[in-house]
Length: 212
Image (cartoon, rainbow, N blue to C red; front, side):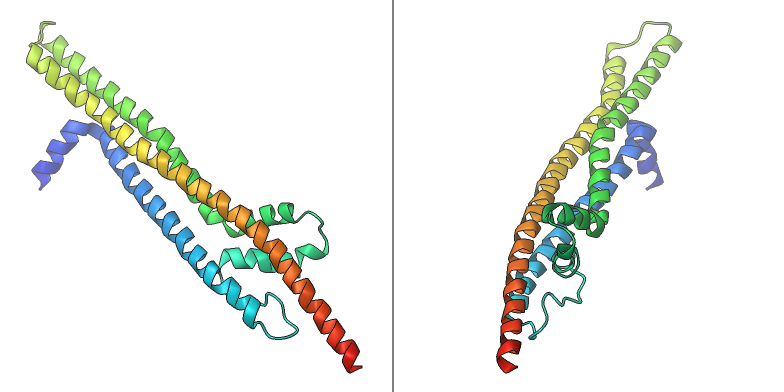
């Protein structure tokens, strides 16, 4: 096992090992973000209509859970709508506050997609330096097969860097578009919740006047 690891290390070098760790970190961040967004969206689509149908009289958006989408709408209805005429600005602020972890993960995924080709190029440069040192030690007349093998090994990290960067960049834009879609949906649902709660308040006031 140790021999196999040393053979792999000799092939890819320290830059390749750093790329392998970067790839694992990217896979973890992408899966975590994708699963998180999927779970909260499904919970939101299930919970929000139930809240509209079954909330107790006199209450509106009395949500005690931890779904960030519903928490944003709840805060808009209960707090921010009273002192702001720009719902979109309030949603943007609350979105940043409730999705700080997702925003941070997206930044890391973007950084991985940018840094991976650079690490691959760095590994290739290290490999080429080693090839030229070997040529110098052999008196400047290298064997063509040895030269081709050395250059091929040096280019391995470039291939690794691109194999990490391309999927990471695709995942970043997919998750970013989905994240922006959540933002648009929350704005629309916030207006819907404000209208629904306004009707409920007017209905409660009318019922109190009739009882008086």
